[in-house]
Length: 193
Length: 193
Image (cartoon, rainbow over all chains, first blue to last red):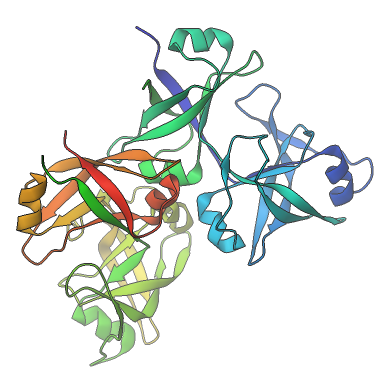
């Protein structure tokens, strides 16, 4: 029998920054301050937050996650889409910014208009290769996840992401967690098609 | 083959008031002003909104739904629980206020402290008896509902509520709608156990 139980952690809206954008937003040479390690090795939450603007409204206090990345990318919640005035914001895997929507990011020392980078993160599960073998899944495979107690649901179309630098962990967002009444640290059950 | 397709409408946080509480909050003899009929016959949204307070924070602009009811009851979202400071707020069917939590309701002419009445609404589907027969469900039966496109999910434990005054309609809340990327008017598929 393949393994099925996975820890689920909930993501709030957050932003990843390129080195270039860190320097525009915070000043030349600025180094982001780590406050907390996250579930994925090497990933961390930063002390700093930013304002992200859409055509209709803004999100304040958007947490920066480190380390820096090649491209700036902001992952919002479906419930943020109305506030920003961006009904067309697509659901994408992290790093897949083709077709993502423009945004303005405002920091303490400057602001930057990006022609792309705003997405709703696609539900996904991180696996190291050994865990993927135990679960019987391969990279890019779509699976379902049953999670929650009284308000349980089976979320469909979670992407399995397999990489040696990953740790076994499912990422849902706050909307999804609220819909099933769970917090970070809940356990889910992977269901194969 | 039983019928399976049902329209899904999304509920935001809202409040139902007793006559007594209408008079405390808005003044003696006050009549609530209807602005929009809702999916269920005789139910309507009112022009008036209220502030609902918990131990830690408040919700502004909570819409009143009419007509008046025997008991005042406020249905919030799981995402409101943190803002109010009420992590123990239970999931209940509308009208089942046993074990629900206290709240303060503030209106333009007065305020009222209720010892109970705050709940997270349990997902449910309204059926008239003819529709229930076509779907093959009975009152109080629990079913699942598949809904959503790219971000689809199967919500479990929806209560079937069958009554001659009801119209066929599924009620999810904004958290649940956001989790699967739908708006009001989407179609869902009822799945029997």
